[in-house]
Length: 150
Image (cartoon, rainbow, N blue to C red):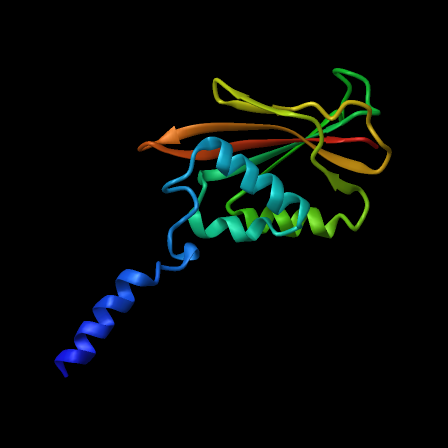
């Protein structure tokens, strides 16, 4: 019996706990969180981020329509969701088109990560910006801005 206990203790020290046992937002930097969001956005798997609750309260989604003139009605579509799974469901219900895209280099500074998609392609929904904050030392996502290439 004593030998079994020794083997169990050794096993626990040798085999690390699974990565999914640690919530995403507990031990990550904002760069890692934004990268995880971009990957999940492209994979159409935003719901997987919910386990770590990388948001506080609701997440705001703002879609800017590139073909609508500035200050015109309908330029921005604004929605709020309680989970990323609900964001994913809403985006998926819009259909296969527009295609999702994350383009250009990312820069994070002063609560905002921005992407520069450069030239826009028709029928693409670009990740444009992510507004973030910190709560109890943990980064969280406030607002996601998408740009519709219309």
